Length: 594
Ligand SMILES: Nc1ncnc2c1ncn2[C@@H]1O[C@H](COP(=O)(O)OP(=O)(O)OP(=O)(O)O)[C@@H](O)[C@H]1O
Image (tube, rainbow, N blue to C red; front, side, top):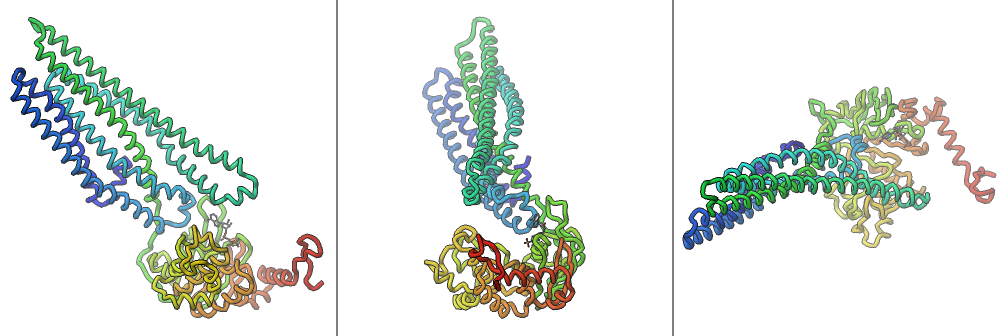
């Protein structure tokens, strides 16, 4: 069972707590049945004596009820903390795992799917192993006690009840398999619906711009409808299973009672009234056991839901993490070397990089240039170890990065991505991600350097302004300045800049570039850019085309060599000499000199 497999991942104390609460729930169920028995048994055992049995019954009921209350309270005391420890533990495990897996994992695990796993599925696991399993144990305790008492009062009725339980178990197993089949489709269908809802919100502007409302809404309705259909089918199956199980057990008990009455009537002289009462009482107890079994069937459905949820949680936890090569080592130099590197993305046949080799000297700026889709960002992703190459090695200071402990690598490398991600926190918190201990004065000085001061001045709450989901309340250029500021603060010896200033206006870009030259002096900088005017200022340029290095050198050397770079440079120079002129026609480009 997936649920037990998942429980094997949590600390033994949590497992013990969950197990103990099951035992206590079973005891509570048993005590509940004994309370029923305590009412009837003394009178049946000593018919005619009113006072004695009355007192016994009173005491028995009081003891059973007290036992039930104590066991139920104790089960809650033990089970609830264990259940919460389970959910917290699983969520922590999932979040840790998110950081340890290669980024390619998320081509299979959308944020919607992972979000559901960490919230809804973990909760379903908790409900299954605490609430549903507890109630099942209580029902089982009650049913076992009632069947045993029925057997004490009338052996045929008891035997018939046991036969009913066996039949009920068989039908439950059968229906459980059917329900399991239906529920296996629930997790993917729920994920699909959640992903489409998320996509609908994120793509709202595109939907409006493209007039795609009707088609997107239809797709959304289909996805949501699929979840509804699965849940409806599952509910019908559960209620069918509960009802058919109840019919089977009731018929068995009724037959047992009939048999017991018939055999009592066969006694010469007719059935004794006391004997008939015992049979009737056994029948009532056995029917009570059946009600408990029917409730158990309903709780079994929660276990099934928990199974499906556990499968999803387990599937993510089973995703392989980035391997750590031995022996672990932390580099002392910060030059970067790519040796014969090949990279293929998940789900793609074509290689993004192949046989790629170059060296970026320590403490220098190396620009990576090349056409769109050439593999420039992929190179930076390998240095940050977002994923591993399929062949070759990436080294920092001569150490294969697979040998560098992840926390050390995170300290060594800072990355400003093309579209930086900001957290839905204050501006100050987002910048301080780089170095949480940075003082206000450091933040102010940094802001002046990278043009963030004017952003802060324009925000109602200044540094305390919360920037919204993914920094959505800021412009692209403002987000870039925040990302650059936090990279400066990080003081990592290796800095990766992927089109880091592409959204800035010319004045701000010039300001930021001057600041970066000063702030990143002495660090190893890898900069991906389409603007060759930026690359021209680098110490070294690596030209990439179709996943391979097609040229390396300084700007002057590459222009002189006359390859791809020289062609790009000439094109950029020509483009700089042109300007858009609406006077010459709608958006038509004309030479500035004309
Ligand atoms: N996450 C991904 N999954 C699958 N393929 C990818 C992924 N990222 C990039 N690729 C593919 O790898 C190749 C190289 O992409 P990469 O982003 O490294 O190029 P680039 O030179 O940085 O492009 P651009 O200048 O347009 O940003 C492309 O063919 C691209 O489609």
